[in-house]
Amino acid sequence: MKQQDQGEPTRRRIVQLAAALWLAGCGGGSDGGGFAFVPPPVGGDGNPAPRAIERLSSFYVQTRDGTRIAADLWLPDAARDAKVGTVVQLTRYVRSSPAARPEEDDNHEEAMAYLGAGLAYLIVDARGTGASFGARGGEQTPAEIEDFDDLFHWIAAQPWSNGRCGTTGVSYPGGNAELAVRLRNPHLKAAAPMFSYYDVYEHLSMPGGLYSRGFMAIWRDYVAALDRIDGAICTLAAAQGAPDCASFEAAFSQVKPVDGAEGGALLAAAQREHQANVSFPGTVDAKKLLFRDDALGGVAWRNMSTATWLDDTIASGVPYHVRASWLDGGSADGALARFVLQDNPQEVFIGATSHGGYHGSDPFAAAPVDPPVAEQSRLLVDFLRRELASDAAPPAAGKRLHYVTLGEGAWRSTEVWPPAGGTRRRLHLSGANALSTEAPGSVTDTALVADADANTGRSARWDTVGSGVQVRVDRGGTAHLTRFSSAPYAADRRITGHLQVQLELSCGRADGTLLAYLEDLAPDGRITYITEGGLRLIHRRLASAAANPRHRVLRVPRTFARADASPMTPGERFTLNFDLLPTSVRIRAGHRLALCLVDRDTTHFDDYAGDGAPTPVLRTGGNAGSYIDFLEY
Image (tube, rainbow, N blue to C red; front, side, top):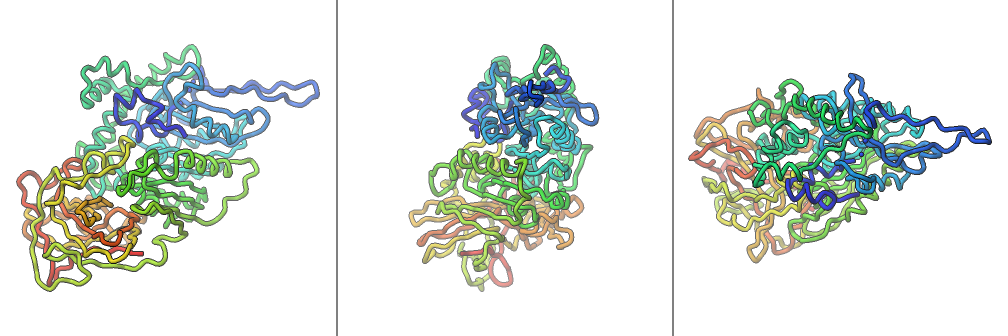
């Protein structure tokens, strides 16, 4: 598949955001009245002559409510003589910029991969974006997802179509690819959500109930500029430090109109309708959407999270091809929840890459991306070709998960999660800043060291979901923080899965944050980041098994609902249970495992304690149960 960070250099240099917002690709243009093929003429022998097709056409498809959405259709040579399956992508990141020839189109490389497999490719601007008409009442609203129904039925009615459709996409379009499954449309036969977020609340925007301010602010400005909201490009220019708006706008991505003499006028008319778009990040930033059950009009976390529609996706029986990363926001947590909960046939890959899979990001080694981008593409295309073939067999039952181990580079496969053979380990925190297999007898109170600048830097897992660059976390300047470490490992061991933490704490404020970083300590003192977990402390209340959202089956039960918020009484001691995002990592002989605790990360999240607030005090020993649990192999 096309590497967008190479294919769109101008946009990437200027905006410095591209990969996560553009990895899904972009594409090509009719006169606004829909696309129709000329009926095939009859040859002299009485048989229909081969259909006349265009390699790339751009046009509008009208949805059930009359909204015209812009689409680019790429057709393979096979469509001249046979009916073919179709790969569909619905993006809010503009399907393509103008190009003189198909070979210059933003989507050419990706389209050629599908066409080479004998598949058609339809890439569509979501309503209220690109050249599509309409206004957006939020992101991934029911209306946006229901447009898939119209697209699938439209495709099935075309003379070149075999009536079999598959969805795919990276990031936002990947979420759309899975949200389409809930419609249970009879033409949808395969879904490939790539580096998408099963639960947008926890896996991307509000991890642990913490507002991911850095990512959301960038995303808010960028999508508003893409939608051509009045003044948005200049706002983005200022946020990116551009010297002047005019030159920034001149170099900013243009939107491809549909084909035909009226294409430009139709594009201008569509963009006028975009002025009524509702900003989802702006709504969250206004503190109106901070709890999982919050909603404001069409803006609701439940709409954007594929986990919401679990019963429908299971009932569909649609097979999945999934790719995620241990270092990509919370995408691995979502991939594991889906794998455990859904009986749909699944082939799941969790690697050590950047968002989108374009850069190797193992924190222990400067290794190339594994598998290579070309192999990732081949696996995806093979899946879609198999499931969309006219003579496709029913999907093979069963599911399989392939995952890589950090610090080792070895891939393993399993049909169950957690993998069989693990031993449950518990390490207790002690007043000597140690992680010990034995609970300490003496009681110690430790005030966490405060340093808002000693976090994970600006190329961490929450930054790269908005840039797609290599994930690199530098923990070298954090040696002074509150850290508990184990004895050196006598032999190599692997830790795989979620890690659960219990802490006995007291705080001098009603709200706040607790962040925990799992680290490897080398004999030479080098600190290597492995994974992390965090929680806004008013979400400390545990949920009952019945109240815990079903997709949190692998995690400490918690609702993040507004009614369950539990502000602290200053000075009162309480027990805090939370988990770290899943991982698979090798701890080498002679290395130590460490747990670093901090009370804020102002680079990435809102500060819920406020300036001057005392840091939390941790109690260890005696009856205090402060420990970390995990599976070791």
